[in-house]
Image (cartoon, rainbow, N blue to C red; front, side):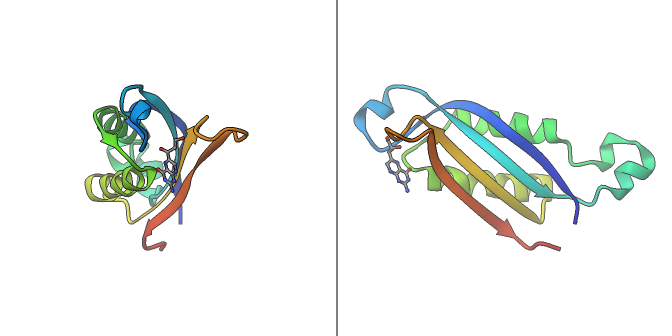
Length: 118
Ligand SMILES: Nc1nc2c(c(=O)[nH]1)N=C([C@H](O)[C@@H](O)CO)CN2
């Protein structure tokens, strides 16, 4: 299985359960691994046969900048839904970080995998 990845995609958004978090935008960081058979893109050298990481990033930036989730769990599920349903990705692994959210820790967050790994 081939993987197209995006690391440390940083996006400012409203996220969190506390009152102050509903007022101040915070940064979340996404690492994404997406299954993609790269052979046709490699054989043709044509972007139309590739999973375009720029298009994925643009869509996720637009989505997350406009969102106001309470939990990182909800954001993570919806990000994976978008990647799978809009970009035809069979399997995705997402690490979503919320830097500075917990005192004494660099970041917190979660790692989820959705779909079938071929
Ligand atoms: N499992 C989770 N735990 C917590 C979350 C969350 O989204 N998922 N959120 C918070 C607060 O918003 C926190 O990030 C503020 O410091 C606490 N725990």
